[in-house]
Image (tube, rainbow, N blue to C red):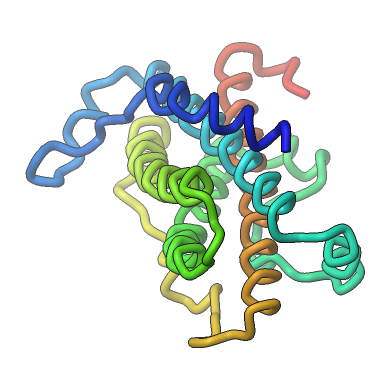
Length: 225
């Protein structure tokens, strides 16, 4: 209960602390981000990833406290629910992450970001059907969904700046990574939403970690753990 109260108090602060990437002009073209230096753009992208992870962590904790009794938490852990991004070629162990190139770090972040855009839209729709879902939780998931699109824009421009490559899309969201039933049972729906929140929190942490490793390599290549 105390976590929920703190979340309610901190939520307005998150909205003011967040620094927009401002990658799009009114016409929707990627113009503003290219005018920012590579170093500043990477810093902004990292700030976005940090905030997204923080809010996803708060959302997952709030959902858990409100809808998931301890017995169901155990059931989920024992059932071994698979995350939707499990099939993606994303490095997971520390040794793998240390060995991959800057290019693959950026492309891994982009794959994760694009793979979660559609599932988070579904999650918002699903949470809106709950009778007792607080506005704070709904606002947090909406905020994360919007910021994820901004993060995608920033990472795409960063790839162009750092790797001198054209704009790239992986289209993972169109390859059926995320499948859902039209009208699942209530308990099934709650467990699915909980799994989505838990998995997204884990992947958001990966995005933040990869980007910070990339930043470290730009400044101190031989001492990045």
